[in-house]
Image (cartoon, rainbow, N blue to C red; front, side, top):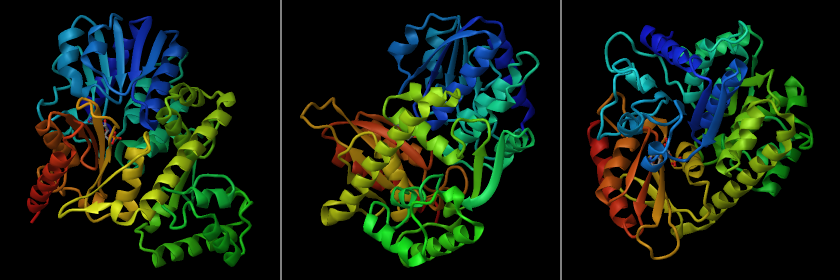
Length: 467
Ligand code: C5P
């Protein structure tokens, strides 16, 4: 499943890494970024290569130009900064392990054209030709491919496959396809992961799982009295652990939940609620979903170190990570309830988009993702997080998400939020980008209305290109 040029680039990166005795590593703060850095850090540790790993929200010129280490490994970012990297780090060995597309203003460099930076990015291998990679691979999956080539004591780091799958779950990519499936199959064969069909809710007390289940979205999320009434009606003990339910009880719970969802006005496909669950046999948190969610929450609260510790099998980190996850869910559920109760002051609808302002910080992207996937599915959803004060330079942060059904059937057609946000943000003096289905931007304070009008019209043009 792996194209020969991806394989040779991965091997090239591993050979470069092996020549060094020290590495500077950077990564992004979400579950994919944290699992990526944990995979690379563990592989380096096992080879006796010292390292300094940092989680950053962005790679900018000031950070890049001050780097003086001989080996720099950048995970889950870096593709957008290849010009800066080539300019300031030309004498260094730089490895970029990323899955983001290059911005509109620059073309993605060929992965094999130069020796540094070495770019391991599926977008380098999918521009026509025979080398196409089947399915989308996240940075953790790519980091795992590199780690597999970093052999120490004859071992190939296959035990780290659980982290690759956790990163893939975090980015919500299809696991049972292409390269991801190759990684999964290897993990299953080696006993690293066990799969099972069941409810995709994680593990814990059923009452709490239902009360805080935002993804998949349970219609009575955040409403304890509804949850209790539902459990009483179905005769299910909410204090029981989901993993302890008999098959018959889990099947009854599943049928009842699916029927609740069908009766509600949310759009939760059956396979979002029920399907393959991943048990991480070697990790300190066994449920793949819980593991990913806890790592993600650590990063979002600026405590990525706890998430990395969890990935490096530090059992002492479990309680802190669990508590950060619950804090995150509480914040998310409170904001969902606020939006639901806000009526006309809540979500606004224009011809081609939905949009609204969010008050709580740190949850914008996740909130937008949940609402776009399950609640407001017909048009892209734009969420604005406006900073208080009148300073025009204080950036308003934007997260945009859309349901996959709105996506382009082929390149150059249909909704592409990365292109739309980059264009609209640049036009008002900001910047943006990301993926077709999930993108973000920062724009100057005061430019929100112009930005919203521009996004609405760009999405309109993109949708017209479909018809
Ligand atoms: O911030 P958020 O989670 O909404 O970002 C979604 C995607 O957009 C991420 O892949 C992020 O890297 C990208 N993004 C970007 N430029 C920004 C903000 C986010 O490319 N200014």
